[in-house]
Image 1 (cartoon, protein in one colour):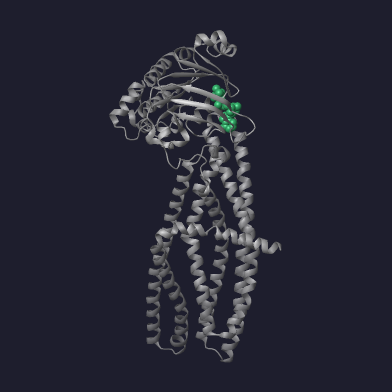
Image 2: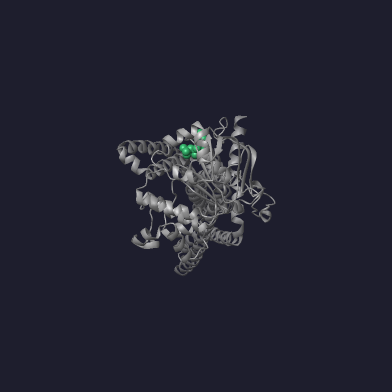
Length: 593
Ligand SMILES: Nc1ncnc2c1ncn2[C@@H]1O[C@H](COP(=O)(O)OP(=O)(O)OP(=O)(O)O)[C@@H](O)[C@H]1O
């Protein structure tokens, strides 16, 4: 019972390799050529045994110099063919391995970038990265080398056995009787190897996640003098991975050693039986020579299959993980029939209308981050959103951009439910400037142009000018070509913000979602950022999470949020007299203004 269950599991694991064939299919002619090369090399390998027989019986034993020369010439011809065939097989198979693993990498990446953001809250980025790199690399080595090794070995095994039978039936039976001896350890250890391989892969993923996080937060680590602590913790992670790898390689070494020992013992027995026949004169020396040649070929093939079997099992694990990722469906998808064409902003229809929105983050299903939120924002209005930390202000922005869908209620954009708009249309209409500026590790040009990849250089310069960024950019070592480092580490906070603002200016969105920076900028920097913001907000519908009194005062409407609810709306003066929370916020939060 348990046995058949495990067998089923094995089959299921190998079957996970099958969908990989769809990635190989476009290159079927390359595969075909590789298989042809494989057939040629296997054929040549098999005929070499006959060459051995010929050389022994006709060259040495018949003692003819001429025949020996001929035999050697034929041998050289065959070996040349073997070399050409091996080159073709190796090149073509490796080519397929590299090609297919890159295609899979692309497919996985294409899937990842379209997934709903909450997927990334549940799955660590290190793990995803490890799938993109380690798992695909594993598949590459399997498709490119192990698979062809397995094929070749199987061919040699079958061909070798046929030649053995052809050469000597009695001795073949000795060899065949030994086959189960080899297969049993293959099964037993192979299963263990596969299980350990998958944990080994997981352990490596853990290591890269850990290291990635530390490297990203290196300044925190150093300022708390946690280097040694982190070194120690990392060492523990690597040791864990090593321990798993150690048991895996032990099992594999056992497997290989057992197979080699058993097969070569069998060959020794055969030599003994065959040697007696040659001594008795019932078999020629050449026949025994050829037989030994084929037997070794068969033995090596069995050993290779045993070794590759474990690798194939590892590949099956990697394939299963990759396919699982490829099968994830984004929870936020484009509508079947987008109503983009019907989107015509009219002054009498609200730019944004929130109808009774309730929303829980998937990881916290019991707590509502937004509760019964209704809000109407007219075109061109500036709406300030204020409220204590955790009130749900950022969540509101996330829903507007459809990173999540509300549990109940609907959001309308110029009278159309945002679920009926294509994601591109919706998100192209909105520009989000987050509190923490997010920059790519590239140059200034790339970072600004991210707002509109089609923009000309002149448009980029103009956007930078409007964002009051052109002056400091000009002072960077390579101007617009200056590399900003990872996350823009080579810039100050205010400079980063202005680059991000230039990006938003270039995007020129209809609706601006602004999370005002809370970090204290120096007066001059703040003045620049503020000026850039004002430029950006001109003639746009703007929602702004406000942390400054000046912003709040300039807003057309102020929305006060608490615990996921809108508790009041009005102007600054109205709220000051009517809303105690707003009064408190003004006293505390806006104090520095
Ligand atoms: N990705 C998430 N998964 C689960 N809960 C979240 C997530 N993001 C935010 N929350 C929770 O939702 C609530 C609202 O968070 P939100 O970020 O919208 O607050 P906020 O008003 O923008 O606060 P702050 O002013 O501090 O940025 C908080 O209780 C927060 O802990």
